[in-house]
Length: 111
Length: 112
View 1 (tube, rainbow over the protein chains, first blue to last red):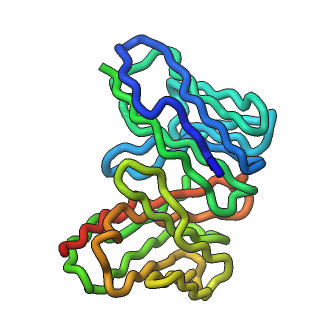
View 2 (view 1 turned 45 degrees about the horizontal axis):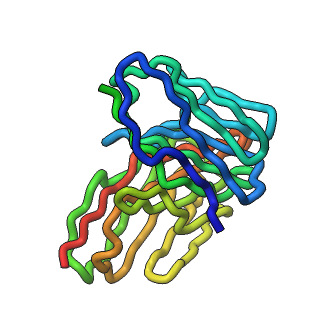
């Protein structure tokens, strides 16, 4: 029972490079989310997808794009990475908002 | 936007002690959730509360949904070393398109 799977687990980027963080869930959840976690800031919502085919901005969307590829997969793209995007990124999914299931995170460092 | 004020920010306690943490908001929430995050992992749901006044237990953990629907607390009794981690409260309000609002977390350290 995999739950929410995120890849990669660790990544180091140079400023200006691009990359895509992958997320897949096998629980048939409708909603999926991307959060970033920074020390003392808690979890901040970047983008979310309430259902397949829809995406919306969260609290801190600047510098990111997302794609809800199908019901299972929700990817997060950094087009031109900046040091301010150094963070731990979590993907989560839920059945209509009740009890999110989180992945184990991607630790991204931008140098 | 909606904000949750979670306190305390951190706690350092001795094994066996009881712990209490809480979340307050100026907004009303329909659902309160408590999560725990172990080092290097994603948050895991501990307790979910769906009705104002509801008191729910999960082993040594007890959480309550405040009557005003603007607050919640989590108690941990007889703490053990594996209770170490970050505890997050989260609230879900009507019309939020299923987006949770998270508190900033309480870092708990348990001294054996």
